[in-house]
Image 1 (cartoon, rainbow, N blue to C red):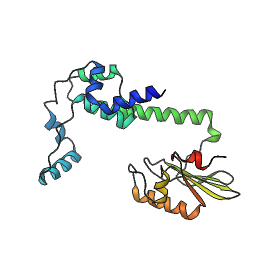
Image 2: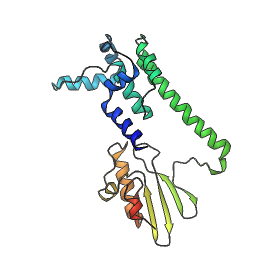
Image 3: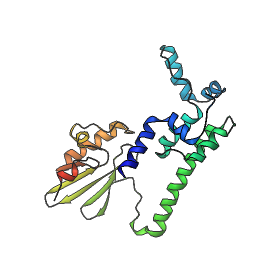
Image 4: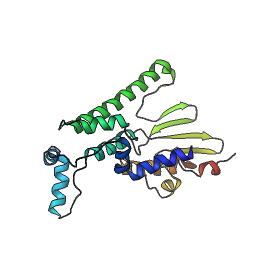
Length: 219
């Protein structure tokens, strides 16, 4: 298992060249209509305009293989299959990038929809949709507090020794101690507010992903 994890890490770190070689594809460089694609995005216009005004150089447009790799990692957290890579590189449609974005976002939505339908059909008595704190069991309160995505949650548990707060908003204990949210937080101010509130309301606050939790709370 450790060897598999190491291999995957190496592939991700090496990125485009090795990934491209394993897929058996060869690129001819950036597409000729790169300027046209750049003009299609208001965000790109703003960013590139500011960079040009400040005299800051920028990298050239990503090649199709680079674009596909980044898109899959950003949206799905995984790299594409060899077949998907080869189909995309062979696609000569100038709109292939936009279509791939729509496809991946659409498939992601369908996956989420299927999960929700399964919960509703098979676990309806356990499914609660809420945007406010909810007591799921006596003494156990769940709420969304934000973080690397809006659904990042927190749990407060009333125990004989006091209230324990478990935060996903804070990945590591130092995020709690320093009231410093994770770097990928969508709303840093809201995350800081949630961490401060839990430190005030709870006797103990635990960052759910901190690797020291196993030793810290060993029975």
